[in-house]
Amino acid sequence: GTETSKLPEGSVIINQPLSFFREHLRLFTGILVAILVLLGTVVGLIVNIVLRHRLEKTLKNTHNYIENIIDSMPSLVIAVNDRHEITQCNQAALEESGLAPRQVVGWKIEEIFPFLSAQKDQIDAAIFNRRPVIAMLSSFRIKDETKYREVSISPLPSKQLPGAVVRVDDKSEQKKMEEALLHNEKMMSVGGLATGMAHEINNPLAAMVQNTQVIQRRLIESSPANIEAAQRAQVSLESVRKYLELRKIPEQLGLILDSGRRLREIVQNINSFTNRSEVEFSSHRLSDILDKSVELASVEFNLGENGTFAISRLLESMHHGLNR
Image (cartoon, rainbow, N blue to C red; front, side, top):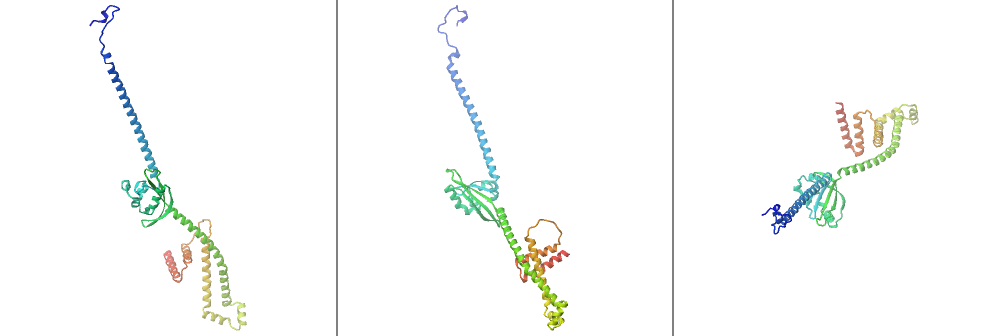
């Protein structure tokens, strides 16, 4: 080949052979395009993988967050399908059952939670009618103890996955508080009634005690008025006293006075027990407090003769124990 630099000026080369690059230009262009397409595909896959990883992480975090919210609830939350099989439950439900999650899922709800056996019809009604069942307060016997629990059933919104969510709330403490408030209201009513009764009892009681004391004075004392009345009746006062002693009249009058005093103390105790007063501290003998407590108990239970004897023995034993 002749070098082009040695040719005369203005010479034209005819049938010059093509260079290697020009000869394979299409091939190089195709390879470059393929490389660019492959590189774009790889970049797209990498971006897709990164986005998918981020989405999976977001979904996992959201799932864990919702699961933590449900697990933090003190209520028992149990999800079931239309065959009453447990599909999911929260931590409180697991603690109630004493089983692990894998031991609970797939089992019938009444098998894991027997106290919900009576709610099977309500679960079916909620799923079939697609309406929540209003919370029901029911009593259950659990471990030899009566528990009050509120059960509410809500259907799942998905038609492709029919089921329901059962929520159980423990209302035992609330029930106890309601019963305590009701008892307190009853006691307040009884207290008002007792106060009125005490007032009505005090009036005839005072008359009974006063008239008994008057009888004692007129029969036993040697007052001028008694001596004069005996002379008018043409009897001696000593004879009257002798007759009364033989018939144990003074003893009977003393028993009447003792009973009246005791009844007055009981009425006072009832008034002090039912009347509202400000809290204040003071010193008291323990035996006196026990005496008043037993007296109130005897009134409340209306003890008869046997009960009175038992209370006397109880008082003696308490006083003996306190004096040791």
